[in-house]
Every structure is written in C-alpha cells, then in structure tokens.
Amino acid sequence: MTNVTTATVPIKFRNKGRAITPGRRIFSVINGIVLTVFALICVLPFVNVLASSLATPGEIATTPFILFPKTFTLDAYRYILSTPTIFRAMGVSMFVTVVGTFLSLVLTSFMAYALSKKHLRGRRVINFLVVFTMLFSGGMIPTFMVVNAFGLIDSLWSLILPVAINAFNFVIMRSFFQAVPESLEESARIDGCSEFGVFLRIVLPLSLASIATIGLFYAVFYWNTYQSAILYINDSTKWPMQVLLRQIVIVASGMNADEGAVDIVPPAQSVKMAVIFVATLPMLIVYPFIQRFFVKGALIGSVKG
Image (tube, rainbow, N blue to C red; front, side, top):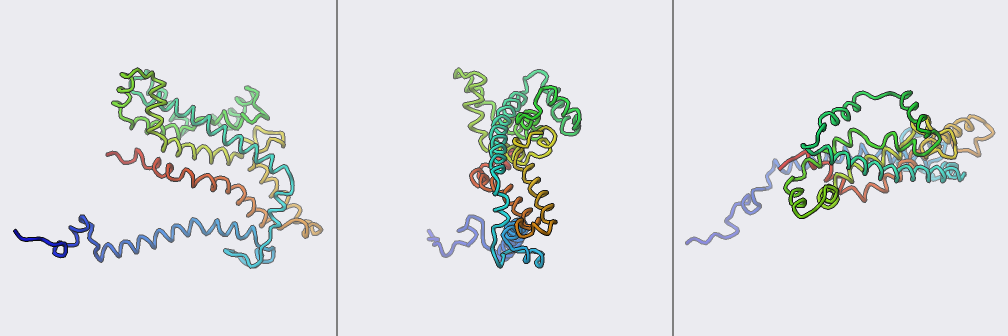
C-alpha cells in the first residue's frame, strides 16, 4: 500500500474543504472593510455626542464635528446634576422600566404560549384581533379616555398598563413557542406535569434567548417613555427621565439667551449632548450583559433546521 503523507494531501482536504484561495482572501478583506465602515457609522455619532458634551463653548461653536475635545469641561453635567430632581426622575424611570418589563414579559409570554397551541378554540380570531391592532389603533383621545376612566391619571401605572402587551413582541414570542417540539411537552404531560408546569419547566428554559430579546425591546421602550408621561402625568414629581431632560434643555436654552446667565449656565448645545448621553447610558450598560442572548434570540425561528 502506498503511504499518503500529510504533505501530499491537498490543502482543501487538510482544511476540511475550506481552502484559503485568493478569492476567499479578497472577500475577507472587503468584508472586513465594509463591516468596519458600518461600525464607524454607528459609533462615531455617539463619540461626537460625548465629546461635544465635554467640549468648551468656543470649540463647539467653531468645530462642527468633534471627536476629541481640546479642553475638557464638565459644566454641562454639573448643570444637569445640580438638582436632586434628576435623581428622583431617574428613580421613576427605573421603576417604570423594571416593573413594566417584568409585567410585560409575564403577560406576553402567557398570552403567546396559549395562542401558540393549535387546539385552542378561538385562537385564529384572537390572533387576528391582536395583529389588527398593529395596523389600526384607537388613537390618542380614546386611549386617554380609557386611562382616565380607570383613574390612572397622575399614576405611574398609566405608563405601564396601557402598553403592557406589544402586538409585535407578542407575534415574535408566539413564533418562538411554536418552534418548541410538541414531543417535549407531551413527554412532560405523560410524566404528570400540568399545563402550567410544562410552561415553566419545559418551554421557558428553552426560550431564554427569546425572552431576553423581547425583554430588551420592552426595557428600551419603557426607559424612553415620553409621550405617555406628557399625556397622563401632571405632577412634576412623577416625571420620568425623558420628560425632565426635555425640561432641562428648554430651561438651558432660555437661560442661555439671557446675557447675564452665560457664565452660569453652559450653552444649550452642550446641555443637549449631555442629556443624550445621560439618557442613553443606562441601556448601554445593560446591553452587554444580555448581548449573547439577544443575538441568539434574533436568529432563532428565522432559520429552521
């Protein structure tokens, strides 16, 4: 028999069919360049926001796009954090985000699991009604009348209950639950699990990626609550972060127009940039911890084996 050494084996066999060809090298280089450009497009605006919030008024006025300020100043952040009101507003936003996200995940997962079962009577009608709300809604005034009728005006629950279930998130989670093999659920029922036990012990552990993905969607939505707070919250002590930051920008702009306040209050542009950074930072801190679940959850269901 002829001995075949490693040196005589073609490269494509040694690399399991993934031979490094000139075309593959060119593709890798072009792919890397394109991805780098897209990454810079996403990152550079945020870097500009942070740099502008730390730059001096003169540099902001003379430099249209700042990536690294020549002179650092924290006047904008001192102005934003100069009142304890912002910490109260941050607490309100944290409460609405945490409680709202938890309640929305519970209600959405229960509803999505039930409506993912083909044997449920009236399933098609309910699914149609839910999807119908994605295209047509009651509108601002009817929604306000409903919230007012339930006595939720000036209550933080008015920022949570009317939007507890999002139709788009429901459809995504229902698709995840439909992808769970029915054989697993049937095996659990044979072993004595109730329907609720099947949901908690079988379906939820297999759907952690989807729950993390939907949870991130809900958290970002609740953290950015603005219009609902403007409509339903009249008490300024219950304003969330977004409403208060808007008021700070308005006040800064008005005082900046007063020549006697120029030395006290930073320019409106600097305050705007600082406000954007403060409002975005909490979500940036949370995202890395669920990023791996988010990527996996975004892909599950789109490709079936």
